[in-house]
Image (cartoon, rainbow, N blue to C red; front, side, top):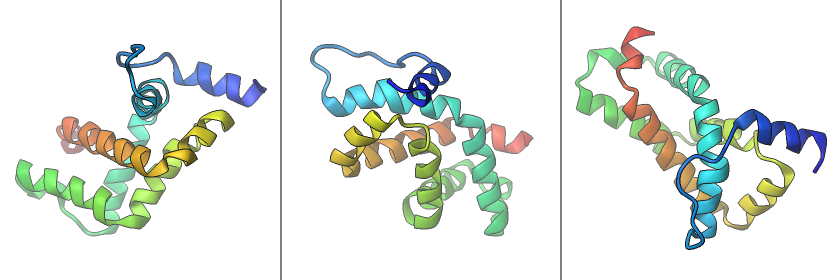
Length: 131
């Protein structure tokens, strides 16, 4: 393992979630790689989303909770440029080995990544009001 890979693994922290012998390869990747990265990058995701709403002239706090949830969904699911930016924030913290695993099943892992990120932002919706 090279220095960058060792640094990234230590910097991201331990596995989050349950890993069992019955866990699928995607589930292992999710808990060992994606969850720690999402946790590490959380503040950046929040600031990035706020920047997205500002640039797109969306008065996020003027809407109901349900509408805010829809705005989060639409921003990540339908705005390909924003989605790719978020993916880059995650993929940039992969080791070379993790990236090799990722490209073998990128479609499924992208769905997991974006689903987890959407839920993470929705669960912290109250933070958008204070920033």
